[in-house]
Image (cartoon, rainbow, N blue to C red; front, side):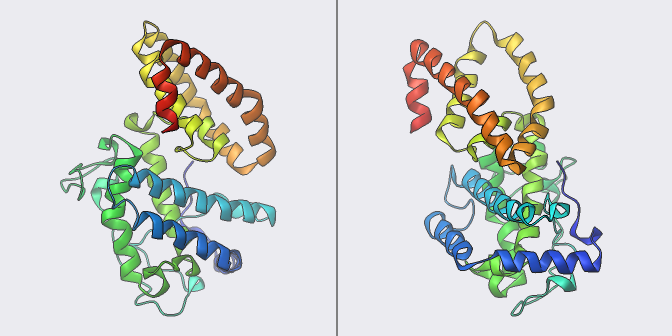
Length: 284
């Protein structure tokens, strides 16, 4: 799934979307955003684990807005369009107190699949496909590019109250699109798409367990080759199913309780009989 660019919307669409975002951001939304940052710091900057938390939290933050848009019959804005900080902020997305409406920050070459000669500030990777995990990508984005855009725009964007600025959501949609690009790269094809959609996060214990079960049980067994073939088939059809689950709660619950949960129970039973540590590790 790729998001369309914010600049492809008409002026009337931009006005409507900006107002819908403004209407969505309540004090509860601001409190949730601030509470997360108070606990986890600026995205991805407090070491291993923080990068995946950063990406996952903001993906779910965007999903909450997208669900609200769907509930209001505004499906034309889902997936939420993205905003590239190399472009000026559309006038319809105006907000008081900014330092600039034209940050002019071009995305670094290391966040593209084509890559370039300059490495990311944490791991030194020169292209998006080189990152070995969501956590690494989140830490690299959070240590430089993400914060630079917030600080350059200034005003509310340079504070915990940044969701008040309507450009906040399209900006994070841009980052989320980068994460999706990585997840569809060879290094990113470790994600349990349908399980993640069922439980809402890559970090939920059942999803972590399924990854551990796959990596430490099945892929270490004599069934490794046929299972890799099955995985490649799964990766080819599961993303659109997961996307439908994100946007249809009824379908999500059907998939979760009729397919995902029974499979988790079965896999836990097998893992416990083979290696109880796999089960304990996913809960820690």
